[in-house]
Image (cartoon, rainbow, N blue to C red; front, side, top):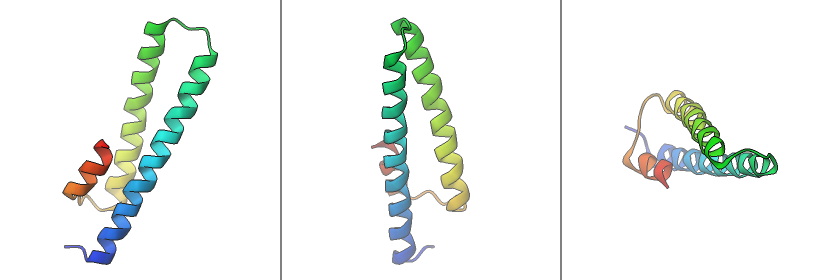
Length: 79
C-alpha cells in the first residue's frame, strides 16, 4: 500500500507522462503533415507510432511504480 504522499507523486508522474505523450504526438503529426504521403500511409505510420509510444510509456510506468497500477493511473492513461 502506498501512502497519500506517494500516490500524489504517482499522479504527478502520470500527468507528466500524459503531457509528454501529447507533445510528442503533436510534434510527430506536424512532421508527418509536412511530408507528401497518402492519407492511408499516414494513418498506418501514426498507428505504429502510437503502439511504440504506448509500449515506452507503459514500460516506464511499470518499472517506476513496481507494477502497482491504481485505478486513477488507468484513468489518467486513458485521458
